[in-house]
Length: 153
Ligand SMILES: [Zn+2]
Ligand SMILES: [Zn+2]
Image (cartoon, rainbow, N blue to C red; front, side, top):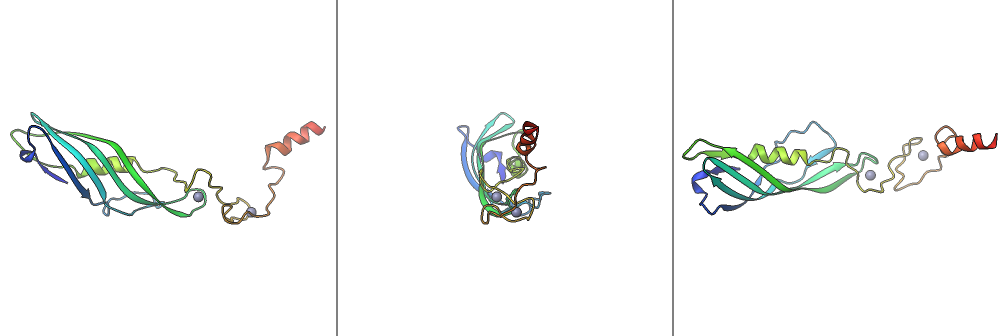
């Protein structure tokens, strides 16, 4: 997103636009970009400083870290801010790196498809959301069975 500071009036400028997410490298195979980054920005110039505030959002496809299901989510940055210094009297400024940096910071580190996702069974690997399996937790798995053992002695 290229900004020519000459085009920004004293009162500021509202700007909407998209920033491509396709080339955005993330060293994480649990997500995929599903849309460009939609930006709604307020631009102002104060002397030789470009002040940017606004919101960013884009569609992301995550892979659930518990059950490995793919799901869509909206990644929104509600309070995007950037300050870019430039040499007087004007400059062409590319906001793309600032926008991409904040979007990447907003990514879920351990995405889950829902807060009550039950994940995969550690014994048989089955998806507990779809097919509750018959695996019984072994005595070693449950802290309660150990407590029972102590109580019965
Ligand atoms: Zn899940
Ligand atoms: Zn199981």
